[in-house]
Amino acid sequence: MTKNEIKMPLPKLDDLFTTEQERKDSSLEKVVDISLTDIQDFPNHPFKVIVNEEMQEMAKSISEYGVLLPVLVRPLANGKYQMISGHRRKKASEIANKETLPCIVRNLTDDEATIIMVDSNLQREHILPSERAYAYKMKIEAMNRQGARTDLTSSQVGKRLNAYEELAKESGESKSNVHRFIRLTELIKPLLGMVDSEDIALSPGYEISFLNKEEQKWLLNSIECNVATPTLSQAQEMKNLSKNGKLDEDKIEEIMSREKPNQVEKLKLDFKTLELKMPKGMPSTKYTEYIFKALDFYNRYLEKQKSIGER
Figure (spheres, one colour):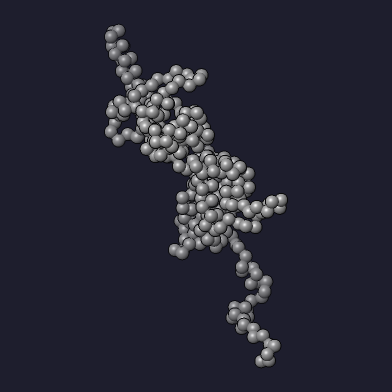
């Protein structure tokens, strides 16, 4: 071999018996049918999969026509697969008694999988505040681990985008709104559920997220006792008192018991006394249902006593 000759690597054995086109085709992603039992849900998936009328309609369609749009999965070390995009299609397929699901299998890192999972689900028409909050948090954490992209720059000022700015740009939200949604993940579950149900508005929800967990539990008890949720001004007052170490259970009760403008008069019950009357171990979320059933039972008893007296 002369000095100018370059030593070329020997071709692989498989390359000797396949054409260039065949090798290109083998590298392309394909749709394969995978058993539903071999597909695991994405860990801490922030988007709820609810079996409602829409889900039943999807299951009916899948029963008749199959899954028309393949789901996206990634292979796991244990030989199973992890769902990236398609949790609702998987659930509908289970309801339709399907055994397999058409899948695109893609090799992805944990952070790549998280980002794709969030992005694909954010396209849904209806997204709860809690879903958006945890999705944004997961994506921000994944982007920060990867290192925020540096190829997105402003042509005018040349400023690099950090993870929050990039997420805001992609989602159409302001950077402050991204922060506010992520802050909601600091709420205890019952209070976050009230934000989802719109019993607590987003702005007061953001403010009370700065209360510590014990303070939030006090607030929850006061909400149930007063049958009223905090206004923005009340939430801000509690936040400031908490910040200065001056918020306690009595102060929360005093703030929450104030009459609000245009407030319809409501029955107020002492929560601690009420709790003593409830069956042991019953969660506070069941108190209202229990009280109404007890009232129905007592009213039937009174009617029965009245009819006996009239005989």
